Length: 149
Image (cartoon, rainbow, N blue to C red; front, side, top):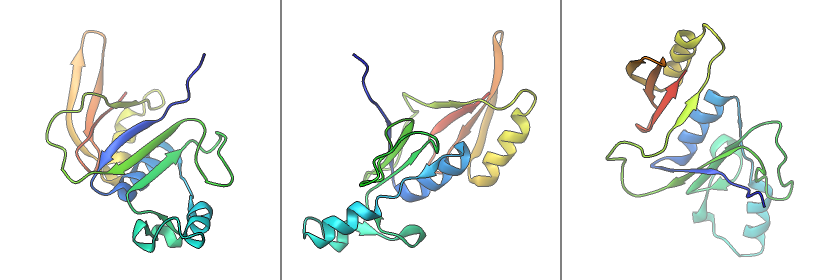
């Protein structure tokens, strides 16, 4: 049996994180507005459960990005393939990640890709050099580590 999965990332501002990672990866921010409007109309959720980034209703405490070519549920806007979900948590990040993403640039483009990501809001932590290769260790806007190869 194959399981469907997503990576879930704790965040202080899930919408800002979704915007950063959508731009970084070439993904799209999921549009859940149709489902949210339906649930608001039925009284199942309240206005306080929502926000309006990008001029459309979204969940206040959740935002996700998905690969633009992967399938998604039309009714809810939820991706059914490669997906990152950012969920609001009250506490800030305080320690090193136990899980991180590696992004792979085109051959010879690591420095340019690192500069692009820094321009989007990442920061460079250090270059890692080991016998098997090297990579850039970066932090996303909320301080989560990720590597650029």
